[in-house]
Length: 543
Ligand code: F6P
Image (cartoon, rainbow, N blue to C red; front, side, top):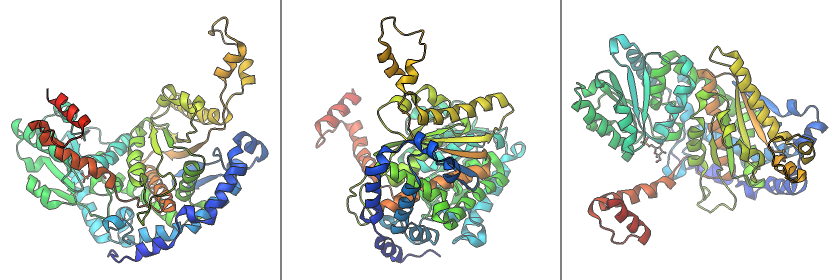
């Protein structure tokens, strides 16, 4: 069973925070010297083996790191940093179920959810729920007998984003007669537009909430239950199920089909648990097991590969290099696969809720930057929106391209165009275009009197802008599982280097409690004790 001793705390605090290591000082020196002036074009010209040296195959994911602003020396010091910060010991403590989430006194064991029964610290409990959940999914998927056509997941944050991201990603594997809907926002427009299209007799509601207390989810679940009753839905118990750690609260709501999980599964790490029920409903038991197996393969890679060939570790180190030495405040995610359109939103919660922290494990403010802003859109759409800024704006923003070799459709010509676009963008970011090249171009649309020199400046690109390209053979359940686990462990790595707690989220609490204070004031008009701005706005909203 899980360790509950403060062993992990002691072990983790014995390893130094990144900025107190000699590798950190070496990185600073390296950046001041060669690092700041590093030029990708020169690096490729000088080293024909650069691509081979800086690309790596992990389970399901091939990664090309060669278009990043680093060389062998940078990587060597970054790896020293990982060793000095005890990344391996911290990783082992997580896998062993030590309570590394110190502020909540919890283990962090989402990896146990995808391990084979005998290899999982909580194998019996995990697999009992998994089997029950998958059996239930199969009965619903038998749509002739179940009569279900629409599945509505009501949940928010980690109880929403995982299934929202994975179901479109795995559309090629999805049940053709089931439609999936997601209600997350407490904004009534969300649930209203979903319910408007449904027949209660053929609808299954999944109320997904780790705590079963979250305001948005509870409010939307109550609206759904009222709508169901008012529209002749029949037996609530046949049409509402819950996925939660709080089985009692689900029962009090009137739900008796509940799939549980445990406090050692963080919300943003929970798609592998009962929270993944909508995914299992969409792709079926066998494919859901493939998803888990893909994640487990990446877990083994993270746990066993030497640091220098360990992809999540390398990506976490490169993230720290950009954030703390190049001062990059954001990272763009560009998945060249329409099925991955919700991946940037999913990764926002994963990385920013995990590593958006300002004190270390000892509660000391950290003197360096932590989580970058994560943002993005699928390619090629992003190219026609914000890529202008990536190429010619004033900020250095590392871009992460995700390319999938084999499409899940029959339009080979479209797929070739998609891949060519992804490759071209990474190339353009790196190569840029000099003013001299631009000067030589004929520009028919330019104003007649414009100075050729001015025009060339507008039309040139600085280049030397970094990117990482991840390549999947195919976006199938196994590969998606590996890809998401890769991101989880990469976030773990940067969090471990920064010596922060990547597994709590106290930053969401203050707004929740102030909302509880303001809600009755909106009804009563009481502005006593409020700041003038909030009081003024509250009065305006009540008019
Ligand atoms: O408000 C943040 C948060 O606690 C997330 O961490 C979590 O994923 C989400 O709310 C939903 O929580 P629950 O699953 O308990 O409803």
